[in-house]
Amino acid sequence: MSDIAAFIRGLPKIELHLHIEGSLEPELRFALAQRNRTQLAYADVAELRASYRFNDLTSFLVSYYEGMEVLVTADDFYDLAWAYLRRANDENVRYVEMFFDPQAHTSRGVAFGRIVGGLRRAIVDARQQLGVRAELIMCFLRDYPAEYAMATLVQSLPYREWIVGVGLDSDERDNPPTKFAEVFARARSEGYQITMHCDVDQNNTVEHIRQCLDVIGVDRIDHGVNVLESEELTMEVGRRGLGLTTCPISNRWVTGDLKAAEIKRLLEFGLRVTVNSDDPAYFGAYVTDNLVALQEAADLGPAELVQLERNAIEISWLPSRAKDELITEIERYADMR
Image (cartoon, rainbow, N blue to C red):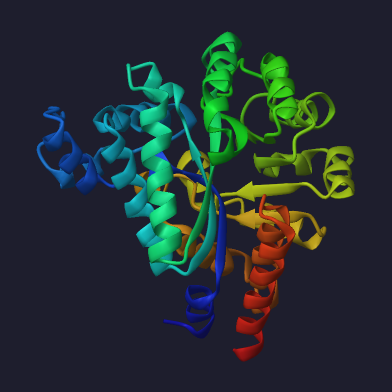
């Protein structure tokens, strides 16, 4: 292992773009299928893993939603989150804000409380047993009607203290942010933080970024590297101090390019760009792998790697005191190397 790779592996990390359903490893998928007496269409783990061949966002989403069928009980959601949080602890992730997609489950008849209850129990155990801190971000599926998103928002309100923010994900085609303007206005009034996916190299992505800024008023943007196609929007993101949660290896799976040059440019421009894993079980790479891949492709030094983590702390939805503690931890680590 190179010195810089060792530096990355030991670096305290923050992850802000992690779909918990996208951390469902094939081994756990088979175990949950057996528990719930669900028949999978694959003979074994190797065959399932070999089926992960994506060339765009749409082809990925087919596998992503298929995988969720084994998630039925609160214990299933607990085991899913607990497996990820243990892996995060091994990679020295100190804090994570994890997305979850309730509509992908409630549409199958799984109760909302069962979903969030299982996830929350894992978060509490991770804090107590591992020292890893985590929060939940509830995402709406943009290829469903806005009315369904609003109903899901209302369902979430009894669990408001367990959910730090709301987001928007899934297929971006013909599903602009403005479709959900009323939903996010209501979410804001309920005290939720707001983020939205603006996936890489999608149709109308730059216009969608503009809508996120001018119509929705987001607190940050997920992915979002196409902002560089507009000098005006790039400057506005910087002026507002908004964060961008980029995911290099998932970029490569769905576009053929890590977008390393773009991420480095965002960093050089002083924007609060961060590095995350997205759907690590499907893309075969957790957050450390993403940082290593980006470092190699963009020739980043230790100071730039530390800045990526500082950015993540600054745009996280942690209390100020917790942010200060994490920044101190990262600076102490950097000073000792």
